[in-house]
Length: 174
Image (cartoon, rainbow, N blue to C red; front, side, top):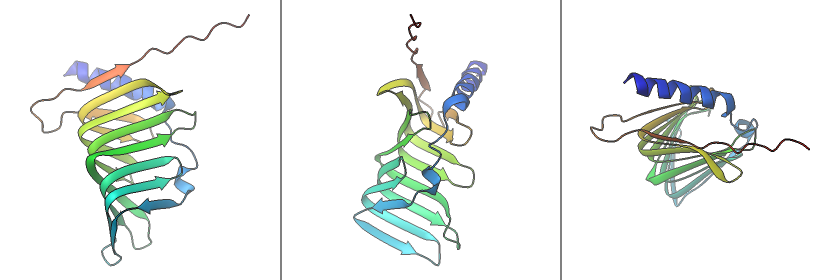
């Protein structure tokens, strides 16, 4: 157990250094495409179904169902996406990409937390190559702090697998 916490701490430190979303994404408009939509302004819930595509700046999500909860002021409070799998992608300020997939994703806007549930996978990509991969039944990604935690949730089976790939050393200048 101590080893898993230590790995999680190291992982969190590595990510907190370099995982910050593209600065302008939050200011961009959100575009949603789907086969069907139901919007309930009284309850503050919008449900999109069938080949749903959500885009905001560099953020791109594909899912079978997306449920958006929003306040009376029309501010998004949470987004729940379900699919086989849901796919998430976002470009970071330094040009790297974050890619995630799971059967269910939930984004809590107030806490800037992305929860990946059921067969979760999170990758960081640099120049088209994976620099790390995290696989677990559940993964939580703090998008502001750049901290990831992974666990097996309620599953009696399943392990957390993290793969860190060494970076190529740059050649010294002649």
